[in-house]
Image 1 (tube, helix red, strand yellow):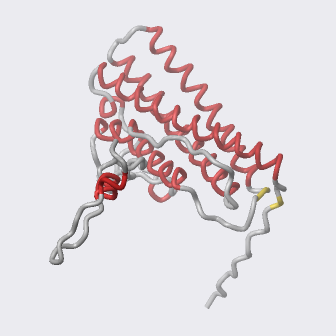
Image 2 (cartoon, rainbow, N blue to C red):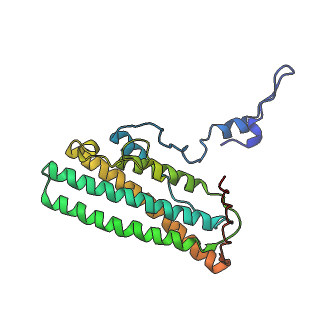
Image 3 (cartoon, rainbow, N blue to C red):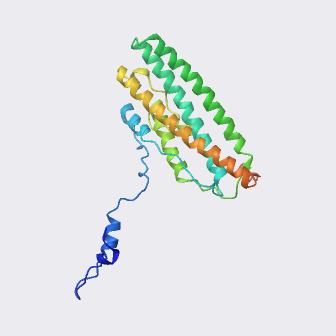
Length: 237
């Protein structure tokens, strides 16, 4: 590459100056994460939901922020929700495998995987409750990876259930039927890839959270969380 000063362009009185060094920098692609891709608020096919769930966020890094404990609790709860719906997906796929007369050992493996998934998401539910008691600061701002994890919660939840499902009890939705989830044996494989990718993503994020928590425990004081403010009940009229 030529000397930087050689990229200075001459300018005319009627033309703004051009710094070719800056132009060169602008041509270099920025090392930025891809934009978030939350699911649309409409009923879409299982194939589209599988594609969205496969495009999952990557792990996070760096020293814990003052809101780290809030993020850790948030991510643990997201892991529990994703695991819960993944268990439902595995059991639905197992039923569909029986209907499609797939090999018995595949059906048995799916049931074992669903049982293991149930134990995993219940463990993350316990972790979530444990984080209720601790904090690393007063901030409650969530990280970018936590927001992207919310998208994955919706992708997997809407793959497991019909309609525009959300974690809210009022928007629970019904589980998809086996035939709706996977019409063919190839569809069974696609669903399993989506579930596997989602669980890999959750594992990567929560493993990083555990490492960050260990760093925080070594270098910072974990404080009890302040009690939540009591809400005043409206007086009956």
